[in-house]
Image (cartoon, rainbow, N blue to C red; front, side, top):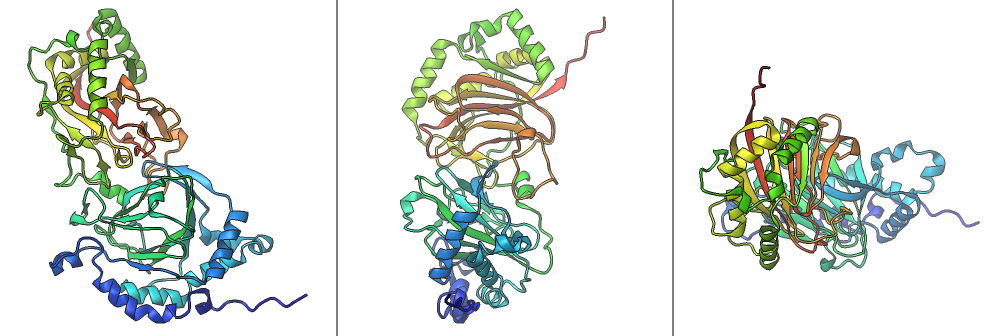
Length: 497
């Protein structure tokens, strides 16, 4: 039997000369303007820096590590409001493996040791000027298959100082999707609506960037083909935790630049006749009493065929005809909270016509009769969620509201959930999981409404109850459309018998 080859040194785990290139790469990092070229130095310095290194690792070692992963590690599919991904267990825990299991992953263990070695940490410190890094291992392997994605966030958690992604996808093409996308900022903590730079996930490429509160916003583009994008990703940590909060806390705070702003207003006095718009059956006293009874018992009611047939078909025809057209719509921002098109009742447009129905005195009276609540003010939008772009992340309201959603999505095939677009209400499990994302365990979901056409949902949304609209996949055949209304109310005093 021939003797085993000697173990690789840390330097040999990387491409020749890599660790000696830190100073030159640091100069490039310091001068990097990852987004728009600009002559404004102060503006350029306000954007978070990044570094892309091709041919990082010893290619033989990297190929062997990937083979071990595919052979011996099982991927578990995970999905929340912010991502869909196949993810392994934390690779920091590989140290606890039995001798027999560790022997199955020698290349992966060598790669992990090299990435968190003192030499490579010094290399990262020199490039990024991030300050001291400790030896904490924070590393996982992610597998993105068709439809997988990760929405806009900044990675700000605890002692994280530098993020990295090492790509293991071979023969990857830009049209496959899966790119890392970087966001410019309008002002501190408020990213632009759309990304400004894309970095393709090429084999043996690593991307490094400092985790910077209010600046390091990025996402991962949806995978568009039946190809898997594998990557090793993780963080290098500093010796102490910074004082800034998590991404989840930041997206819950309404900033001065957030749009749309909630504008709760009194109902509009008008000559609108509700019978010209909604199903006649819903105006019958018996129907309203039954709906009210169900709402009082369940705090939620679903009404199929809400609009009358004539109005519904006219709306459907106009929706299909308009498609993805942007004007006269506005865009909801920032993408750390939501992105979709919206309008109120101030346009000569069929969607604005429906907003006028929901803000009318006639609808307010009908809503009072089917909920038993004294409706006081309303905040109503028409919304359009474009495939491959739009979503809302999980947020809660500070006070209890009646939330009304009229779904007007004109295509079918959303039932599997693969195309996203579903509206979810779930309990808040804050403190029980990583605060950078919201886990969507089945036990916490109270209601999940897939996109349909002409379906009205009325929900008593308690303060603290989370709600979100899942990212609409590029697989979707059309936009998700709805009329979304929030109604403040007062309790109706019980009659004294």
